[in-house]
Length: 291
Image 1 (cartoon, one colour):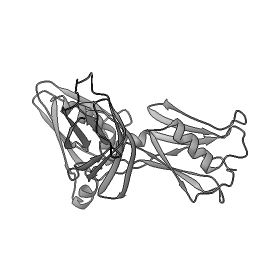
Image 2 (tube, helix red, strand yellow):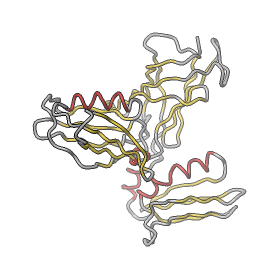
Image 3 (cartoon, helix red, strand yellow):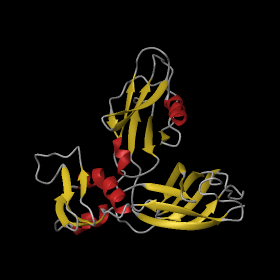
Image 4 (cartoon, helix red, strand yellow):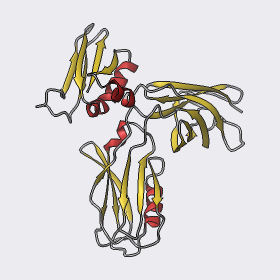
């Protein structure tokens, strides 16, 4: 349990959790706070993960402020799961030896400490069978939104291998359709996932094997991804996260694509652009001179 306190400023604020168990005393479907008032409630961690985006958006608009404290005596658990982890830092930026330009750059590596703020990437596993190995899928941008993904493997019986994604009841469902093929392996499925979900999901082969997949798996929910995620702004414009390497935690390498900022916000060679990494509501910045 944790204790959430929300203080509304000049106007009332409302946070809604459509998945709350309304018959339970510790999960309120709607949390409303009158202007100038503070409301403190007890809730479970899973509910905080679902409403964190709304709280953050309201705070960014200067409509309210909120704080999170242990709701009981288990301070150790709170410290472990608390979304306000240690602040991140950017230690270096590399563009494969090339200069950072205002026109946009792919494959820019950002090195930093604690960029994840203690988070993990939400992940799910797809098992082939005993001899076919398995795949691990991870949502690239960590945070509670990663929990809103599911993966399913089906075999429609025709059409060949296909990977699609669609939003169903607020969740993103990734469907791997073997399409009647008896030759698909973890390697070919990974290649299809990498093509269809580039920049969204990162797929890793576990126990690389070329044996065809013969079993069809049920839906698997992604788990992990506590906190508010990791995002980058370059000159005030959002970057695309290409890949995240957390193998040397807490030192991280995140590969991003920086946007074209020549028109918005109108930066040019010789100007200074700010690269901002935001993780769990804490921000790290680096000033980059454009060439």
